[in-house]
Length: 428
Image (cartoon, rainbow, N blue to C red):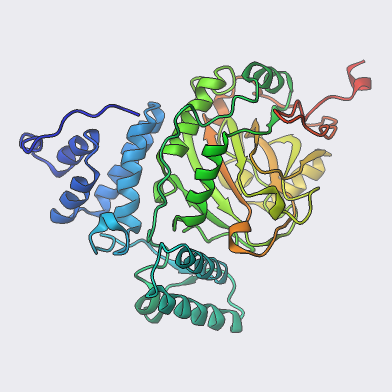
């Protein structure tokens, strides 16, 4: 954690512009004063874009504490609600375009009820839950399961909470480190570098304290605003509130523990995905823009109804460097055609709680079929950290388009070894 200078009443006297004063307050760790200043002086959409730029710049400079402070301020200004303590009964300054979906509404109903059961939200949210149910039933009756613009009636009923930060669960840094000492960094690095496509699996990835805190953050925090995905799948992103000191601690420690895999790569993106109880297999095939992808599974293993599935499918084919983001990330028909053309083979890594998969982000991958228990707290959640740019990958710059894979053996308690391997006869 970055040490903060002492603050005084005259700290903001010298800087003249709103942006200068906000930067000074952020550097001093004065979040509440930042929000007060932004509301008092008419923070604009352009200013929000400026904050987004500062967050990205801090990430590129590897100052994750600063990035987290800017991202926190940005998220509350965009998505805050009167229910969040830091907002002092104020709503967001410039609400973004908001879309309804049956999957998002069902998730929110379950989350609000869960938070009520824990005493986090009061009885007043029962009316919100009823309104969400009514809107979801109406959309379902019309067969409208995708995104639908938030109309005036829905805005009046739930606009003050829908896709808003009602609650952020506290998830501070954990003493003694967030990454478990049960796995050996040198072994993991060697396996990753030597595996030509680039993939290694680690069990018991986080300490017990870090895992428990991260679970609470993901279950309780109302930051799951990304609902453009099929099958009720929701995303949460750093710039929109998926941000806490523990997540940034994990990202920092990964660079320290794996200097030959992550090293100088900056953290480029941080997100979480939460699934409905069922997700069809191979419905999310894509590649990512980064050099290294770290994917962490945090829902209890017992929630998974199919121990052989629920995890990750990784193909031995990488996205061509001349493909743009939409081609390798959002074009399922093109990707499937390409995989067939390249005679791609794959390995399936079954779901286990506290398992991390570190792999070359260029490799096409997909979530395996998900069949989890229906209770809200059993929804499958994964956390993803992306480091570096795909063009800067120094370990697996060019992956052969045709390789034979073997499924990894059942892991030891501490870590799982190389998942990709060339067949012995091919080596000969």
